Image (cartoon, rainbow, N blue to C red; front, side):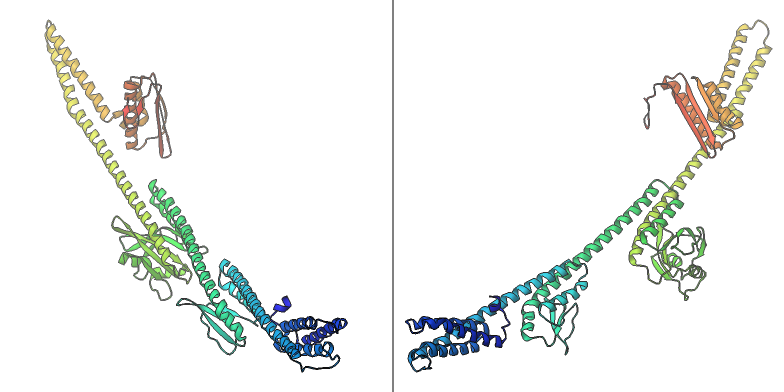
Length: 574
């Protein structure tokens, strides 16, 4: 059956031999039945041979076999035997039936063969389309699949070669082209040898080109989607890294880190995030120079020391930002003039971009990114740099606010201390001296009274005692405002004096071997004084422990008692 439906017929020589053998075998097989009834039945045996030859080798060999079979049948089996006699009507009908049967068999065989060939071609084309789809739709790079796909197509259509191109390629003497389109959008070109058979060209045009266009369109869409997903993934990864860097810097800013620490963190994060670039933060000075407050260089490149001051030339990056207040870019090739450009060229820096750092509406400085390569820095780097400069501005603003708050507190403390000293001096030089003078006058008057003035003596004595008590009370008030012991002996003696006057026993542990700054001593004194007062009033304690130690630039103070407690942060004692 496979041989019958094959598009390629066996050689004609094989057909002739087969026809002769069939006629001979049939003749020999029917000889024992010669002369009996049933000539029509015997002729059918010859007809079977005609059908076989017609179906295998076509119409002309089938007709030839039919005529030969009719002649042999007439010669051997139609009386008179052993002679050829085709004069009767029956004989001519037999020949006609053999010829018609052969032609009809040829027609049916050719039809079956063409349908089988078409079905085989369809199956082959479907297999080819499935294989090409498997190759093209699963590959990450469409171009890498075009070579194997072209080779497979050439094998399927028995071509010397074939080529699938992703651009329009005109045909020539060697190649015939089939343009590939997706609607009005060109997809590419299919090239086959110019001497390919017309049937092959028609098959390609009618059935392969449309499926190839669909595959290329789908592959390009998939490649576009894959590229978009990859770009989105890369962007998301970069965004996550950027957010993590911003969060780390923002945490430093929120915790009140020093500006220098924030500056170093910003340049380090920028180097890690942006890649192999140099980064720097420059603060503008009133004399039209810039100070490098923090910087990181590319690996293998000389580093500019922190604190370096640069002239803000008009053609250098920081100078342009200072002049315009806007982001800028600069190149430091040999044509760039100025001392700053020369310094940067000596470090191998070829170009850079920068953005201004604006603090509360004031141009504070600039954040810059530089490179030693010829490739220009992208706009994405500038955008990320702008995000970080906002945090730098926030850190600078916070530092300025803290500095202003600290200075304000210092001014308040200094003013308070000065007011205390002035009040103490006024009390000592005014009211205290007046009371002492009145006490002395009272004693003098008491001494001049004659004997027997007992009532007057007692009254003056009470007055003198009252004046003395009032003077002592005023002295205590004066000491509370600014203890004299603190000014004379320092924090240690002043705390011992507090402990002696406390209503509760105080266990005092002092580890202070030097005088401390006056503000520190005054603050510590009043903290201990307030704590002892609160313990006596509210704690129901039996003893208070006060431990004080000064090490290097730190004073540690600990106050605790064995009372009932009850103090709450923000609401005072219960």
